[in-house]
Figure 1 (cartoon, helix red, strand yellow):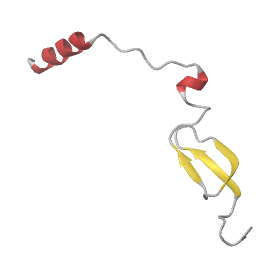
Figure 2 (cartoon, rainbow, N blue to C red):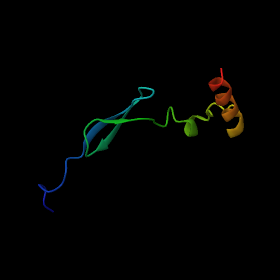
Figure 3 (spheres, rainbow, N blue to C red):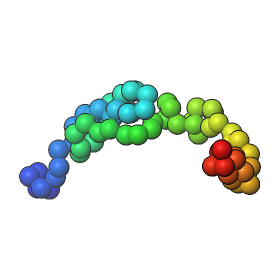
Length: 69
């Protein structure tokens, strides 16, 4: 196998921009930044997002009331 045609496979730091968590993995890329990770993503943490306040009609009525003031 030719050694000069393969990319380097080194330790890399994955940094989450939301919570600041850092994970060390091996990768061909240098330091990587991600928006969400397993420590802060709602699916993995079990924390649901804030429930919506009303349906489409209620939100429309709220916007219409504010526009008529």
